[in-house]
Image (tube, rainbow, N blue to C red):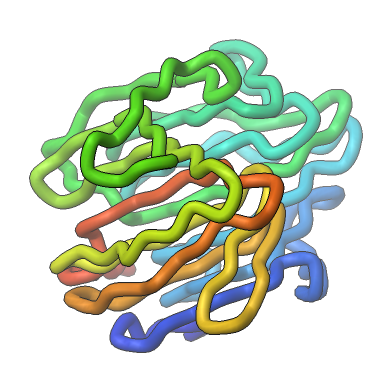
Length: 226
């Protein structure tokens, strides 16, 4: 299966317009944003757990990171309420479930195997600092690696900036809205921009708060299906 698998192309998705697709587990549905592979896949998705649903125990052979968008995600290690950002490196495993139901944004098979830091961060309470290079931009660094940099950013209302990275970037909007090439994107919309290109972004009249990953689109990791 290939969905938005040309990483030299720009992709802007209004995720609420996508149909939910059933996963192999009853009560767990997905909106697929990009994907290379079938059930074992390099994938970016929004996943919805119905009340009382669960996924079978599995090992993260390619790593996993996710943001809880609403509800409470759970596994044997604890409960993760809305606003939690989690990184589970290659080799970790768990039994995910959600008693009350939840929705998560999740990325699979996109970790460097040498990146073994596992953590969970509450994005609701993380401290952001002003970016001296861009008036109206505030940032908290979440993960800085040789192969990627991940941050939470808050842009004041109507803030404008050209952003780009030699390794590309992607954004998931958490609050507010942004304008890009004459179009407006709002909560839970997803933007992926190719390596080496810049985008002129403008926050909406209520500002914007978004998760952003930079630098990871120049070396695309594909699952080993052996």
